[in-house]
Image (cartoon, rainbow, N blue to C red; front, side, top):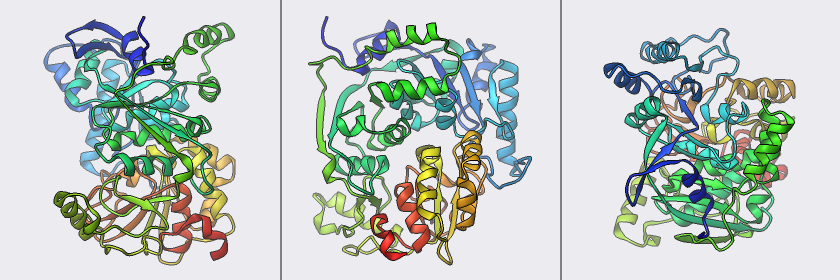
Length: 471
């Protein structure tokens, strides 16, 4: 048998039928839904009088449009958003699909809720009408986002017509330098290969740097790989993966776990397996990174200067740089460090996990948010929120002047009432810094939770490694 990559093994094990040289009918183990990508799919099923084929292999959450104000019970006051939430509730009730609605204790962002509930396991295929479904590759599952028509197909058949991707391996070796994290790793990688550098590829991460990451840090890495155009991101499951899954998947008994482990140990690329593209990087070169423009690949190390049009390889790239700087309100050749900020947002499916909040609390403990800065922390799920309160993290954040919010997508995107005003500049732990992403005319700088905490305390984009000397 030929040597196969992990991606090829996952696709092969879920192929119901090969349709042609490039397309297969792929079986779906778990399908996740939210309130804004599912209504048309349910309408399509109703028009054709088709039921949901396997309701127990679906899970729905309300996350994108929900307000995160600290109130109980939570009330969705925006009429359009309330309609979306009510439609999802009605559709799920009629189909027999489990829903985490606004006031469900398990409500949160799908990409945080599903792993912490133990629903994501090595070897699975997991789909969702959201591009950041690549998150699940951190646990050795093939996850990717799908469109509304594809959501309907999955609901009706539990399968998907799937075009097989090319393969890419990114190997990173070495210990991460002080002050850096998985968020810095992925921003650094995207800056190297470009926003389209992995377009059409399933990316497998490998190397000693990746092996040293926690399961939650790996989720951050895989979550943002889509920002390089990747169709999927994968990390071969190992002891870190198995420990995480065992801690969260409570349904396993000893016999079931032994059987699962017997299957999962082969979930890795074979020695000698061929990848279409390979990249190798040294972790020693990674520093705390921050975006300066309006695309995740427009980022630099905190001690670098904003690039100029003269450094760009093509006239098109120079024009894109000028447009980005005009929108973001920065000048070429100026240091990115020291840029004043108005807002700080810590949360999202990229960095709203308990591990992220622990990092922030450790930095801000005994300090206070800078005058004039509004700083928000939005946990990624109800479970994360409760754990942070039990550990004293929430109290530390409130004492430091942060707003402690209810779980949801919040200011990751302007689909709810958490958004930037025109011209406001935000240090954000989210995944996208597109024009208007956090609000019309809002200016977003992507960075790690540690860097966002430093910005909150100083009122400007700050190298977290120097924070102690500035306190």
